[in-house]
Image (cartoon, rainbow, N blue to C red):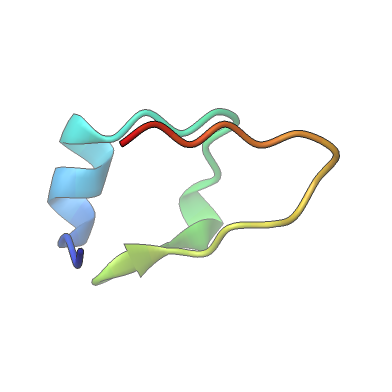
Length: 39
């Protein structure tokens, strides 16, 4: 699914959110110790 940046800001919960990771049509994710995906 591709969402524009304004929809990601408004509708998608990302914690911790980093404005630098937000792109015009996506969000750059970093791999960490834990991840939760719902959907």
